[in-house]
Amino acid sequence: MAKKKMTVLDFKKYKEEGRKFTYVTGYDYTTATIINESDTEVILVGDSLGNVMLGLGGTVPVTMDEMIHHMKPVVKGAPNTFIVGDMPFGSYNVSIEEAIRNGNRILKEGGTDCVKLEGGVEFADTIKAMVKAGIPVMGHIGLTPQTTSQLGGFKVQGGTPEGAKKLLDDAKAVEAAGAFSMVLECVPSGVAKALTKALKIPVLGIGAGPHVDCQVIVLQDMLGMYGDFKPKFVKLFANLRADMIAALNTFHKESLDGQFPSPEYSFNVKVEGFEE
Image (tube, rainbow, N blue to C red; front, top):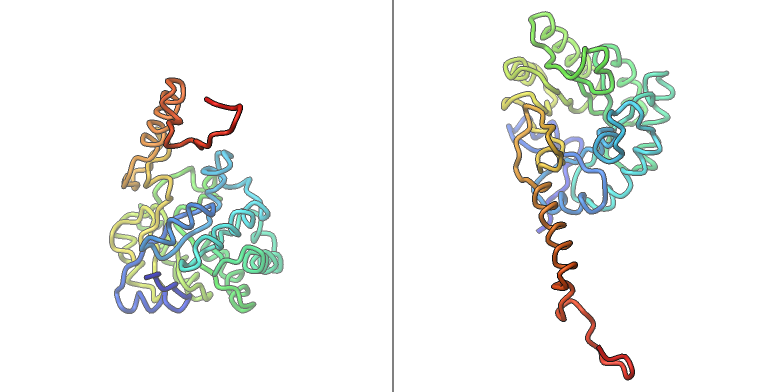
């Protein structure tokens, strides 16, 4: 039996009911079909595709066209999964009008169920205007990858009383602006717990400890598809990189040895004048 797709209203309902859920990244059709058959409720087509799919080494260079290109096949592959479309750097920080225009593009061309954008108090007016324009918005505070240079790199956020207070101010501003949920990234567990209790909208944590409403993870991280790089908050639920390399090496060996393709994997139709 296919799972029932979440709606924007379900996010708040799940929080009110104390019902946990999960959220992973996905960037292509095949992966989307796999996630769609799982129990996972939410897919993010994230600008992390800059690292994962495009080899750019960061998220800042990712364009709107690249984001939409990856959103379309994910939407096709996961009809029973709530899909979030990430707004890339430069798509919402120029003006409110441009933010609305690009949010419209993501919903119309990408086909996702909502958009996600980074920023707290400073982007509250943008979020408010987008929601008023009919665009469902998911917030994102804490470690915001698009602006890591301003944060001093990929570091835990909210690790001081002042930093934690800033996070709480950001969270409340994002909620008041009309966001229906909020990603909280790389934050101490105690701070994340306090924020989760303080908000009526669900907090979706990535590297934010166990007390949030939803756990978020990059799919390639949890499946062990990278090499040596592994953030502290990532648990390997599989080691597909090693399995894939082993499979490729077996294919290579059997092909060179003549074991593959055997008759089982060949078309054994006799054609006169063309005997084996």
